[in-house]
Length: 218
Image 1 (tube, rainbow, N blue to C red):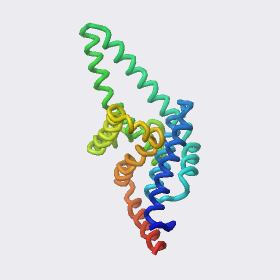
Image 2 (tube, rainbow, N blue to C red):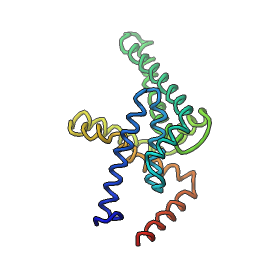
Image 3 (cartoon, rainbow, N blue to C red):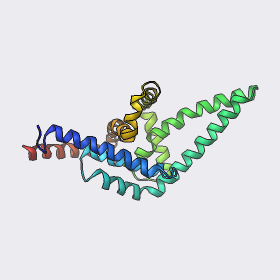
Image 4 (tube, rainbow, N blue to C red):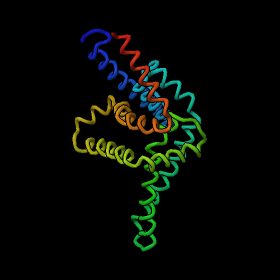
């Protein structure tokens, strides 16, 4: 139980990786403009950690951050601009008492749904697949619609996190030391299952690597 290959050590090692990824994401997101690159790197490192445990989370994070920096930053800037426009429209329409304002308010509210669905998948898709900015947006939207139950589950997870933050103060402490890594860990299992639909050889390869690891331990 207490050996280097025992369940206790593996659990402690995984917890450490979750915390490390959280702080890597936090530090690399501080300029704000790099949030897209750091989120892409976070999901790349976490999905690789869950699937194959190849390399170290730090080196995987840095490599994904460097390789996807330009594209992820461009995606994030587009997301930020769209979000800012929708936020301004919602605030403007909510203070303007007229029929046109109410119609615009409903329109903006409706637009929030597909925007949220795309945002859920956007950076995990970039972490997993290569493509243009347009194809990344398109694939994120298609995946969110095609796998609607998973999209709903992801939304429930995020809603639960926000409700716990609002209603359970001790949860804020947990999020301060591991929030990004913890959320990435939980949601990465969903993304892995979704992506495997389009990567049929991945499950077999992962299973072979897992079997080899267990044989090595034995």
